[in-house]
Structures are given as C-alpha cells and as structure tokens.
Image: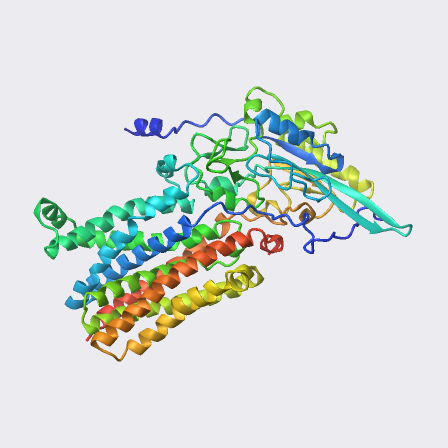
Length: 280
Length: 321
C-alpha cells in the first residue's frame, strides 16, 4: 500500500549526493553584456518578458522572475574627486543563490522543491501545485509563479535550476558557459570559495577597500540562510545590489510565533472554562 | 585615495533603484476569505466544546449550534484553498508528504482532519435532538462525542492559529516583522467563532444567562485581540504604514479595529444588564460586528502585505535587525 501511495504521488528515492556545484559571480569582471541572460533564456526555453524600457541605466530586465533566471544590474555611481565628477558603473549578474538553508524549500508543502545531488535547489515541475508560498518566503525575491493561464508551464513556481539537465551531462550551465569575462564561474563550491578569497585579496591590495564576498560561510549573510551555493564578489555594500544584509530564514522565528498563537488559544480555553463553569 | 568610496545614489534607501527586494505575493482574495472562515469555524467549534464540557444544561443546548456553524463554515474552506492554487488539479499534492515545518502543509493536514470531525460532531448533535433520523442518525449516535470534542479543539486551535504564522513565515515585512501575527489571527478567529455561536443562540431565542456567558467569552477574545493588535502595531513600527496610513487605513481603523473589536465590546457591555428581546438584539448586533471585523482584519493585513512587499526600505530594515 505504501509503495502504491509512493507511486501515485511520485515519491522517489533521492540520488546519491555528489560534490556540491555552484556559481561564483565576480562582479568586478562583469561588463554588462547580458550574454548570460540570453543564454539562460535560450537554453531553458524561457519566453521573452516584453520590451519595456525602464529608464534605469541599461537595465531593461528589472528583476529576476519566473521566466528570468539571470538578471544583469547596472548601478551608476558618481562622486566629486577634485577635478569634477568621477563616475563608475557597477554591474552584477544576479541569480538564484541556492542557499544551504533555503527558505523556499522549507516553505514548500508538496515536496516539489528539493535539494539535488549537486546541492542545488530545484523545483520539480510535475509536483508543484502553484501554492505560491515559496514566492513570499524567499528573502531575495528570486522564485515566482507563472500566470495561471499563461503559455509557459502555467501556474507553477520557477527559478534557476543551475542547469540541472546540463549538470547531468557534465556540462557547464549556460550562463557561465556564455560569460565572456569569467565573471560567472562555475565549479565545485569549495574550490570556488578558495578562488573567491584569493580574488578578494587581489582587489583589496589594489585599493578596492569596499570589495567583499557575499554568501561565504563566515559572512553575516550566512547567519540564517547558510552559505550560498551561488555567491558573489561585490564592490560595494550588499544593499546597493538590492541584497539584504542578513537574509531571513522564516524557520528561525517560527517557534516563537507559534508560541504566541498557542498562548492566546490556551488563554481563551481557560477563560471559556471559567465563564461556563462559574455560572450560578 | 580610496577608489571605492562612492556615496549612495538617489532612491533614498540606497537600494537598487526602487526595485523591491522580495516578490509580491501571488495569493488572491480566496486566501483571506479562507483564513476568516477557517478561524470562525475553529472558534465556533472550540466555544461549543467548552460550553458542552463546562456549561449548564442551557449552555450545552444553546452552544451546540456552534457545531453546525463550524461544519458549515468549513465547507467552503477547501474549495477556496484549491481555487487559489496555480494548479488546482494538483491540490492533493498538499497531502503528498507530511511536513509540519511548512505551515502550509500543516494547515492542509489540519483542515483535512478537522472537517470530518466537525461534521461527525454536528451529525451526532443532530441525531441527539432528533433532527437526524433513520440509518444516518443511528450511525451518527456512534460518534464518540468526548473524543471528537478533544480532537476538534486541538485541531481547531491549530487551524485558527497557523494562518497568521503562515503569513509571518515569509519575508514580507508587514507580515514578518512582528512575532504576534499568529496570536492576532488566533484571537480574531476565536472572537468571530464565539460571535457566530452567540448569533445563532440569540436567533434561536437562548436563555439570558447563556447569552450573557457567550457574550463574556466573545468579549474576552475581542479584548485579547485588541491587546495583541496593539503589540503587533508597536512592534511593526514604520513597517505597518501600508496598513495604518495607506489606502487601507479606513477599512483597517473603522472596520477591523472600530467595528470589529471596540464596538462589539461596547455593545456587549451595554447588553450586560438587559434581558429578553433587547439583549438578543444587542448581542446579535455585536456578534455581527465582530464577524465582519474579523474579515476586515484578515483582508486589510493581507492586502497591506502586498503593498509592503514593494517597500525596499522595510525589507532592508527586516534584514538588518
């Protein structure tokens, strides 16, 4: 009977874990070419999102979404340096962070969101029933649900798969493969972290005093959601890239919230017993 | 000179233009409607069970109508939840696994377990009053009432209590900042549920003593709701602005707070010294206000959460404490 239930509900044994794979996105190398956005759309057969001009620098993508799994940001900064205005562009290719403690995965009521053998977070499209809880749970605003009556996988949650299908064939994810400057680097997470620390040292030695890594195990941002399997080298504070300083994992405060709820319920039951029992 | 020290750019909060940090919740009106009905069903069941086990003969007879209220209010719950899914045809995937860590999964199991219990208890009461006869009545008499009450109270409190925690277990600033949203929805659900019991009791001409006691229970829940709402607003601070001063301020202050808690408290107090018909009319009016206010509370907090999801500064504040 249990086997029948598992068949009916598509419950399979998870594959044996392999070395964790991830992205190291070094924003100091990004030139804003958006090849990653295009390659991602093309490989994953994601539909276009329209041609609206945002007026925000060269960014006409806006945000990550159900059908946008890479998003290049263009941050324009200016300061006076004595000889007039000095300007710089910070460019950053944003992506799903594949958190070690993923809020979306913990929220998912159906088990559609799983941790793959590569340590990445993946939505099983045949399981997801589009409840939308992961959308509100993600602290980075990554995962989203497609419209119920759209043409592309209608009504289910979508986000970067870290090209799960390509990993299965020992191929590099489409975005990293297409990146012309090695701003997006793909590989074993452990090895990428070593590379990232070395690169940060180089940049700091050159005077980039605000350069930092975002998503390393020792970072503040890993306090709740854990280290990120897709992590970043940033040239300014995380907020400048719309990244939260300490992304919150809802589980951490859930017991306290249930506690208040239970206290009210028990209080009501006591009052009720007293009122009905105390009659004359 | 330090090459990296560029000042924050426009936009005020120093984020990436004015793009939100989190995504806008995709849920629609079905969700607050379900939270309202589910909370009311749970509150009615718990009130009925309390009267059943601690009340006088009158209390027991009068409050048992709460079982009907609970069963009736539970009927639209599952259809509402299913209608809100992106893929309603896969609703049963909610019960694919048991994962209480996810409030959504816990809620689906609780609703699945409570609905048949509430129906069985209502049927058993109908059989005991002679309303339900024949083979179904005989079957309904077999329902272990005490067990159904105990299980129903535990599941009912879970159902009334998880909905606020579900909204709070997200990264939407208005829902997540304060730790009290679960308690607030619990209090509101219990207030509206006991109000529904009061309403049907007044309608069926309940004795004055029972009505007074029901009003007292309802007022206790309303007072609790008031206290916990104050705490919620204080803890939320500026994050609560979409609720308290935005487009939703009228339905929130006048509907959820004024008509939903203050007015019923006042009217029940006025009714406290009255008897007979005036008491029944005042109690019904207060109960109707509580029920409507409970819907206003769920709806305004739900909608304000969507506005809050676009508040970049509130998201940064949530993630920097």
